[in-house]
Every structure is written in structure tokens, then in C-alpha cells.
Image (tube, rainbow, N blue to C red):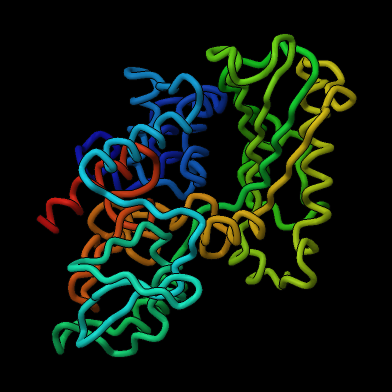
Length: 360
């Protein structure tokens, strides 16, 4: 069964790899890429084995100077074609009239009208917040309501949350490569992949990703220094709520987890031969799922948005993901990780191309 094309997509990555590799360390080498989309080898469909294949055949590309250069280039190309870009202005609502999207309402009540509306916010957030006053504004009688779609998306499975550490370090950490993955395999393989809900569940060897761009791009930090980013997977706010953890005062929900994750990462660095870098951290920013969710309007604070199971209730992958053209509101379109085909910069850019074709 595992070797039959298409059928093997129905199995998890872990199931597929067990059919080929007995050693869990080898399986880890071909499955850690599920971290890239906030999943685990146990809930990732076999189709995502392509992540490891892409890693091996195409490698990973890095824009010199950081992603700001990509953003500035895309904005420049848009402006060359007459696009006017407004920044530092929040969108409060998609304006719907007669079942059709006719514009957006900005913070302060200013309205911008247009022939179509393209939303690049997280799709579940858009249905929950930007369309909440729309009601049954469907272009056809058999189309779902905005409210029913919002409820459907709210109940789907979501990717993990992340505690992100951004450290400016006044020394070199030679052990780290540009991309370094710390894994619990083979000591705590399954525990390391289990969503962490509280500090007491913290494995000694959890899975996390480290980015140290100076290996490729010296401009990422002053000479003799490092800029280090750590992405530490934890339970998202949906999973926290299901386990009985509810937000109290702002910052309290993940307070103990943040401290435990920081301590564990620094200890793993020591164990790996990086030395004691804590005393060399001169600037630090920490963001947990609650902060990330608020900052980027990500539903449930799920850093990678909807999960990527094959079935819609599992988050959806490709055609089972939310459609780029809203069936409930005419002339309303979506781009981004919350719509088809899915998560990640290449897929999001491909999705933007598909949406533009639908519009044109």
C-alpha cells in the first residue's frame, strides 16, 4: 500500500517512513521538515514528504539583506503599475452591499471603494472579524452564510503555536549553522512532538528551529556578533482552551511556558557545545502565540494558520482548503496561507497568482 502512488498520500509521514526506515534517527532526518508548517510527522499527510524532497533537491534560498528586500521589491513592482499602498492603517471591515464586496472600511471610518476586494489577512480571521456584520449576504441561495463558514473555520484543526526568541548576541556562536534543527529523537521522539501545554510537560530534548543568518549574510549582525532567532513549537490557543487553559491577564497564558522554553533552549545550546550564550544576549524580544496572534491577526495564535490535513476539518490541503473566491460574497477574494494551495512563501505566491487569474 505504501508504494502505490496517490494512495500513500492518505497515510501519515510517520507511517510512510516506517515502511522504509527502521532507525528512528533516519526517520527524523526525513520528517523534521514538518516543523516548517507547524505540524508533526504523525498528523502530516504523506503528500508533505515533498518538503524533504525539496530540501534535498532544491535546497533553501535566502534573500541577501533579509526579507525586507523581497517586500520592498514586490512593493516597488506594484507601484510601477500604478498601485497606491497605504501603511499604518487598520482595515476594520469589508463593505458588502447587495451580496457583493464593494470596498473596505479603514480605521477612523474612511472607506475605500473598488470593483473587487482581495483580503490577505488570515482567512479564518477575515470571516470572524472583517465580515462579522455581513450576515446572510450570499450571491446565490445555495451558498453558505458568512456565519456558518466562520463557525466551520473556527472548529478546524490548526497548526502549532510558537514561542519566538529574537536574540542579539555580542559574540560568535560557531556551532550554529544558518539553519539548525534541534530534535528529541531518539531519546524523547514522541514526547518532543507532543504539543506543550504547560511548563511541567517540557521535554528535556524538545524540537525547535534556530536561524543564524550571518553564516550566509554578514549584514545580519555587526562584526563579531550574531542575530539568532529560535522558533519553539507549543500548543496554540485552541489547544490550550480545549485543555482548560484560558487567557487571563494579557501575557499570563504562556508566561511559565516562555520561561521554561528559554531555559531549555539555552541548556540545549550548552549541551551542544555552543557555550553559555545567555550572558552574551544584549537585546531580546520574545513573542508567544497570544502576542503573535494579536500582532498578525492569526486565529487561535496558530503561527502557521490552518493545519494541513487532507480533509477540510483537518485544516485542508490544496483543494480542501478554503477557496480563494468567497462563495458567500461576490467579488471577494483571498490570498495567503489560509487559502489554496497552503502555507509557505512559494505556495502563497503561487496562490496569489491563481487568485489574480480568477479576478482577471
